[in-house]
Length: 339
Image (cartoon, rainbow, N blue to C red):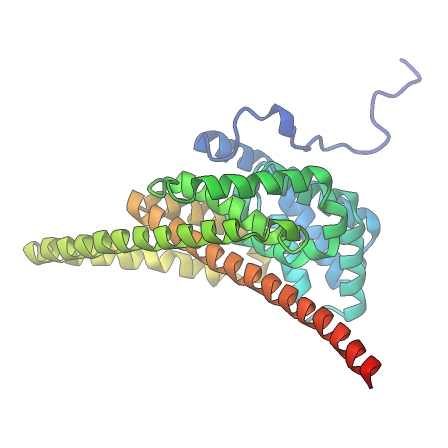
C-alpha cells in the first residue's frame, strides 16, 4: 500500500454549483431547474440551519458566515431564496441579542463571498430580483457595501440599463410575463444603486419611467376587464350544473385543508415544511393562467416603477435643498459685509 492517502485532509461534499457549466439559465428549462433544485437544495438548507442554530446559541464564527455567503453565492444562478431569507430573518429578529446581531451582520458585510453575491445578482442574475426575498435583502444590505460594489463595471452596466430603458419605454412588449420580469429585474437593479450613481437621475429617465407606468396601468386595465369577463363566464357555467359546482367546491375544500395539516406539524418538521412550501408555490404558479401570470408580473412592475419614481424624487428634492443652502450662504456674507 502507498504511504500517501488518497483522501483529502478535510471532508469534501463536492456540492459547489459549477455556474459556468450549467446547461441553461434559470427559467429556460423547468425540468432542468427542478433537477438542480433536488440535487443542491438539501445542502443549502443544511447550511441555513447551521447558521440559524449558531445565531440562536450565540456561537457565530467567521468561518460559518463565510460559508453561508459562499453557499448564497452558489445559489444565485439557481435562484434559491434561502440565503436572503435567512439574513432578513436574522436582521428583523427581536429574539437575538443586539451584540450577536451586530457581530453577525458585520461578519457578513465583511465577507468576500457576500460582495461577490451582490455583484452576481446585479451583473448576471437581475431576473432573480423578481423574488421578493432577494430584492428586500439587497434593499436592506446593499447600502452597507455600496462603496465596494459600485465599481466602474457596475456603473457602466447601470448607465447602459438607463439608456436601454429610455429607448424602449414607449414600445416595450408588456404582453409577455417573461419579458415583463426581465424589465422588472432591471428596474429593481436601478432602484438599488440609484442613490450611489446620481448622474443617472436625468429628466429622460424620469420620463421613461412615467411612460412605462402609464402603459403598465393601461395593460392592467385590459387584464382586469379580461378577468371580469372570465368570472362572468364562470358564473354562467356554475348555474348550468349545480351538482358539478358542488363537487368542485368539495374538492377545493379538501385541497385547502392539506396545507393546514402541514402547518399543524411541530417545529421539528420545519425543514420538510420549507421544502413542501417551495414545491407548493411552484405548483400554484403552474396552475395560473397566462393572463393571471401576466397580471401578477405587471403589478410587481408597477410597484417597482412607483418606488423608483419616489426615490428619484427624493434625490431631486435633496439636490434642490442643497442648492438653496449654497445660494443662501453668499447672501448672508453679502449682508454681513454691507453692515
